[in-house]
Image 1 (tube, rainbow, N blue to C red):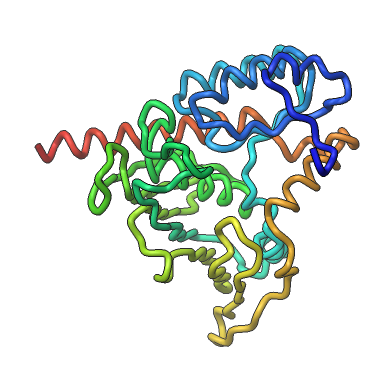
Image 2: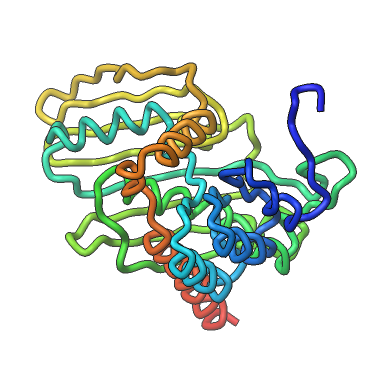
Length: 296
């Protein structure tokens, strides 16, 4: 109230306000569908947190609702908007890496049972019914989407192994995913809730026939980190310049707001692409379940 913000005691009241043009859906995953379906019908623009939903069925229903209502919809993949990742994409597009052959990602953190989004709240991220999964569900979508953003190709094949190793809750606290795009780019992605935050835990590498781009501490919720290019012919490395002060969250909101005003920019958003990411996550969990079954 001090900043002039309005509060609503129900989604219906928010939707009824004609001055609200866009809504950021940041509820626990299992509540995304209800909000997105209602907002799509109202015609308001929607920026929905990732993953799209706690289940593939809900994500499919959301994509259908967005299509019916022709609402402007985006999933909140903030890593697309990190200035370091934008700089990497530009260099890849200019051909500095040559033919991209592989992407390697480590994206991990420590998520204990006592974590809470707000003081006094339960940790919904470790509840299978609310979250839909653990580290794989929460962190892997970032890596899958970032690969698509960087090289312009989506994964078509994927498999995974999961673990419940260090944490005492019902969802996976770690996962290893391996995938391939239609044109043959290989991807490996290690995500975890069981890595102490003081350890190196956020690394992104894009390998090509002419060089390597390495990003350290760019994947996450904060600005900064470093990006380095290593020349494949000489082995020499050089830093890649980018705005280290710009938050990926701020940049994400700025980009979405710009697209709200300029429809030509909405091509960067795709419910169909984001649904494909959810299908890959479902397939990864299926592969992990089969692997677990074969070892019992």
